[in-house]
Structures are given as C-alpha cells and as structure tokens.
Amino acid sequence: MKPAWLKVAVAEPKAVEEMREILSRHGLHTVCQSARCPNLPRCWGAGTATFMILGDVCTRRCRFCATRTGWPKGQVDDGEPERLAEAIRELGLSYVVLTSVDRDDLPDGGAAHWARCIRAVKEAGVLVEALIPDFSGDRGCLAEVLRAEPDVVGHNLETVRRLTPSVRDPRASYELSLEVLRAIKELSPHTITKSSLLLGLGETEEEVREALRDMRKAGVDIVVLGQYLRPGPEQLPVVRYLTPEEFARWEDEARGLGFRVAVAGPLVRTSFRAAEVYRELVCG
Amino acid sequence: MVIRKEVALADIVVPPLGEVEEVRVVRWLHEVGDEVQAGEAVAEVESQKATFVIEAPVAGKLFAILVPEGRAAAPGEVIGKILEREGER
View (cartoon, rainbow over the protein chains, first blue to last red):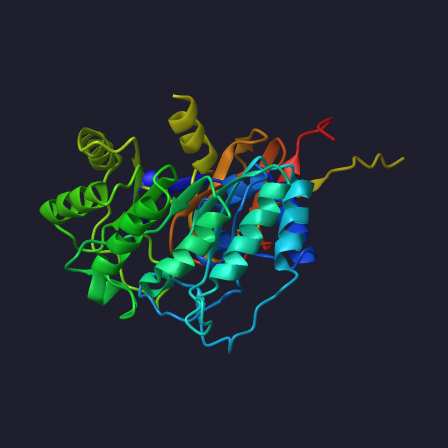
C-alpha cells in the first residue's frame, strides 16, 4: 500500500480522453504520459499538459525516468513547432511548459528546434516555460534557446551530488547542471530560472541542504521539491516516502535560503501548477 | 399481467491514466448491497506511482464487484456495477 498522502482523485474521463485526442491528432508527446505521472488525470482534466518536444526517444538512460531510450539518428520533426502552437491555441492555454528528451545525436542537442518551438508558441501569445536539457554545457546552444525569450527556463538538478552518478545518466553531472543554471543567468540575467530535486532516493538532509545552497548560488529563482515515485520495475526503487510535513519544512527552509519561490510536496513536479507559480512570482 | 420494472446497471470503470497499462485494485470501500451516492469514493486502485480513488458514476446500490482486492485491472476495464436508483436516469 502506498502512503495515504499519495492518493489522487481521478478526473472526468471525458476530459482526459479529449486531451489525448487533441495530442494524438497533432502528433505531440507529453512528459505526463512518458513519466506515467500521477497528476495526469488532474492536469489533463483541467485542460493542461506538459509538452515534450523533439520526439519521445531519449538518448540518455537516467535510472529514475521511464522515457524510452534510443538513438534517433538525427531525425527531427520540422512540423512540430507549428502543430504545437495549433494544439495550444485549440486548448486555449495561456501558459505552457515545454520540455524535451535529450538529443545527444544532434550536433546542437536540439537547441535550434527548441528555439523554433518557443517562438511558435510565443507567437500564439502564450507564456512559455522551457524545461531544458543540459546541451552538454554548450553555451552557444543555451544562448540560442534564450534568444527565443522563454519566460522561465528550468533545468533540473534532480538529486544530490553523491547520488547523481547512480541516478542520472553518466553524461549528466551535478556540476554540469549547476553550470547550465549559472550560464543561463549570465547569458540572460532577467530570465527567471527554476530547478528541482526528487527526494526519497536515499539522500540525507545535509545533502539536500547542500543542493539547495548550490542551486541558490547558481542564481536559481524557483525551486521545486517532490517525492521520487518509481515509474516501473526497471527504475530505481523508492528508498523513503517523505511525509507532507517534511515537505512543508523543506519549503520553509528553501524560502529561508533566498529562493523567490519554493514549492514542495509529495506530488509536486517541476511543471505542476507552473502557471500559478509564475504568476505568484511576477505579480507578487 | 406482468409488470416489468426497468433496472439499469452502471459500470464502475478504471479511468484512463495516461501510459499506465495496469493497476491493482487495493480496496473496495463498500460491500455489495451498500447504497452509494454519485461521486462517492467506491474503490482505490494503485499504479506503481500512486493510489487513484474511483468514484461512483451514479447513485444506487453496489450490485457487483467484478475485480476483487489484490487483483490487476487495466484502464478502461469495468471493475464493478451499480444498480441505479430509480428515477436517477
């Protein structure tokens, strides 16, 4: 049995089916599906989703993630930016979170496609939060994405320093992710940055504190802490379920460290309630 | 003369849950014969990540439990039936 606080009410199935139909008609992928996210019924039922661009095959094999892995041989769907914008118009969204698989098979890691997608969505008059990969730390790629002027740029640290090698793909690293977050602020000081940690993978409280301090030093504005939930038997097991009270304490502590917004909770994810978090930050 | 009274059975269905292909029924919150209200929680199913609460689609009597606790079910599968209360249609 899962802890009582991991209980989710399911939404109107019709709304979920409508979302599926729209996504499939426009040939779009979502991280909601690939991560088997428990918030899917609630988010889709409310007519929102986190779009995953650049396909649904990731070139990296992180041990917490259920996204399909492979080597897409440089293939990019050039029609995706337009279809994405069309779907977003059809859904009537005013704030959208985009994320992508890692594309180490592309010379630019997919940066040009990222920029095209962000521009297409912004042209539809929609605010964009871009939850980007590390682009192997290439500042030129980051600059290209930033020139498309996403409203928020997220890059997830995912876990604490010690656990990174056993949790994330060997091509990712704790230092590289911090460098990406620092570089975003250097290249575009006014861009709001966001990062998140999954808790319950075996980290100690002191290690979480270190990660929060490192993110803050890298200029991160919004921090998100959520429970790691095992997507399936192939991924890492959950070491511990943190209680909602523990998450509330982390939220307070993160605010005390100077983050402009901190959101923590068992079912909180980087993109969960993203529009409200952004508005809280911008409108105060 | 035989008077036929029409009765309607409503399905309790595991709702669509994205890519989740299988859940386990962990708890029935009522027994067969219990009265339930529309929207009342009737069962809990569990994916690898979380527990989902399934609500009664209509008011009536829990008529049948088709998938008992501990057994697997797929999204879209009918796991129980409710005998609709007269006049609810």
